[in-house]
Amino acid sequence: MALAVASSSSTSISGRTFSLSTPSSDLKAQLVGSFRVFDRAHGQIQSQAVTFSQRRSSVKPVNAQPKRNESIVPLAATIVATEAVEKVEAEDFTQLAKGLENASPLEIMDKALEKFGNDIAIAFSGAEDVALIEYAHLTGRPYRVFSLDTGRLNPETYQFFDTVEKHYGIHIEYMFPDAVEVQALVRSKGLFSFYEDGHQECCRVRKVRPLRRALKGLRAWITGQRKDQSPGTRSEIPVVQVDPVFEGLDGGIGSLVKWNPVANVEGRDVWDFLRAMNVPVNSLHSKGYISIGCEPCTRSVLPGQHEREGRWWWEDAKAKECGLHKGNIKQEEGNQSNGNGNGAAHSNGTATETDIFTSQNLVTLSRTGIENLARLENRQEPWIVVLYAPWCQFCQAMEGSYIELADKLAGSGVKVGKFRADGEQKEFAQNELQLGSFPTILFFPKHSSRPIKYPSEKRDVDSLMAFINALR
Image 1 (cartoon, rainbow, N blue to C red):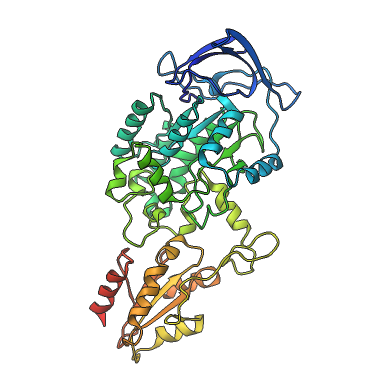
Image 2: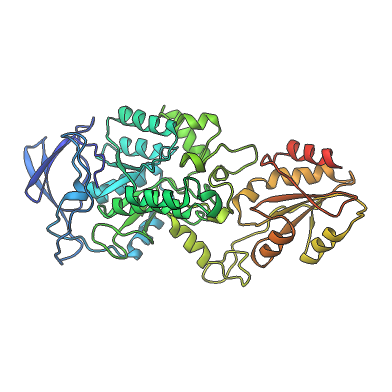
């Protein structure tokens, strides 16, 4: 795989010399493997050998792409290594993650680039993860950037790629899906099959497999994952880990390390950093887009919505990973050990999940309670009920507005309730209560047995009050 490199030195690797260019004139990275680095300041060749194993093997070139100009060479994807680096042990990076838990993103980025040199690259999606490139630039070390061009991105994202390249003086190396696979998918299922049967198949063809090819040319990669992006799937990500899903240059489990420098940073702090450093951003952000992916599967978010709710909005919250970080979902599912699939727990059995929508003005409905409510044809008072799952980040995002709604409606003659509709209750809620995805909001009128489903995704207090007032 060919990846963008920012440096200004000549590096001799296995007898071949490549020219790398960057605005910086001070090469700081110590390269991984067996390298010779030319020190311009002293006119000497310095040997930098980091050997994790004595075993030798040859590594075949992996899907190299043509270089874009003479200064950009597809190092990781094309060089035949004379000495393989040992597959790193998970416990080593568990310890490192603990040591870096309170480190700044800049410090984590510097450590990542220092440890892996030319064998690491930043995965850039064209959103606020441009912060990763800014952090790498600030370290003064050489760095590479790659991106997945699915063929379905917004025009604004392609324009942003060009802006970033010019701003940092780098070349982003793009990975593309296999044309034959895309053709087969579209011919058999059409252009928008993901609206009907889920996004996983399309993402697998257009994103996951190209990423897999890219990572086979690396020993580490850097992502923009944050814990607050997706509480249902990303709340436990460490700042560095052995990748649980993908393989690196040497192949096999443990051959790839995954760095998440902004894992512990909140979204608003990332944006404060971007503004402070005058970093260019995707113009879609100014139109209400926060999390940005492919054009058909991304839309702007509304007041009270979580940032990831603009992605694959027709699916449940737990499905909102495209597969690039599916190790997060696997970990979450593996931790659901409380017997009914409703909550997450650590391996020692202690529950980590707490209930939401907790207020003295909110009525918690049991299965029997909501069945009785649904059967009544002449209720004494109307009800508004949210069908929710406490692990769902979109339910969590509207918690404040729903509690405020309950407080406003206290004593008004409208009851406000909640019904937990995941786990064993999900099938019942889908069949009897119109549950499509979480959260679903239902209004039970005073003189009608059939509940009315709230059709909008505006979950602020004013919008919910307008819905209630129009029906009561």
